[in-house]
Image 1 (spheres, helix red, strand yellow):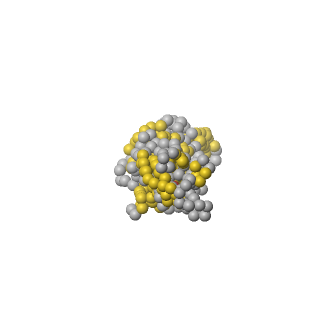
Image 2: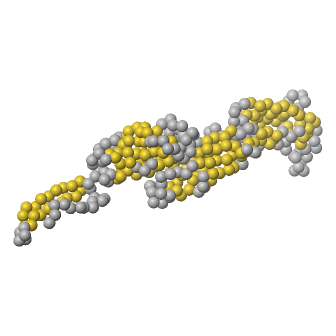
Image 3: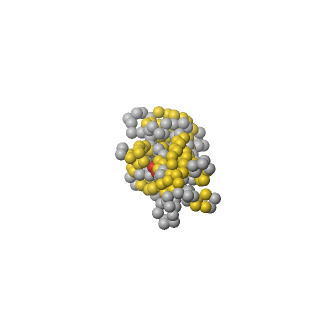
Length: 315
């Protein structure tokens, strides 16, 4: 006895209604059929973060649900993280895509918040809740030029974060390796002697209940001044005390040492600071005397430093 009906069609797309007329005597009249398509698309952002191979590019990934008839582009919107600025549309993406790479961004200056927007078949806007990527920052410790302090913001958008993985790369041509694990957002290390140049990145890992995603931060790097300590005496007499002429080095990029006698004959040469002179030449012990060394080395800035001096060989 009504001409209206309320139906909950959540999670159902293809539906139908059937209306049957019934007289007061119970006789059935015509039956009316109506096929109904319920359009309730949902956008879920899976992750946003810096591209692993190039931290100046940001990768955004999402998933469209409950939208079998969707036939429009996606809109990508962004704003600076932790600000009250309005979101600004930065690009549109084909309906067949679910990944957007925002190239050549200042990822070392700010974290960013991204959302994805569409309109349903009725023209109503649908906006995915935004996700925020990670900005890694750092500095050398105030009282130690060979110690570093790292800080990063929390990833925002997942239900839960399992942990943060800290990766480190040594030297100009090193590769990133897992260095430490954290559940908080800061770290401190006194490790400048490990290499003349060190870079760090953070990777956030999504906990269970999501899409098993990860998000990389930007890269931050530190250069450390070279340290070279050259002794002026050693005694290769076999008593295992100061038997080798060993140069102590730290944070050096290149190294070369040459040792000469007083007549200018080269007795020893090496590019490896871990290789020490044992006080012999051509397999025979050198006599007690003063010898000349020339040490050359470079640090992270490629500035060549040359040190010349003498060393006393005692027995």
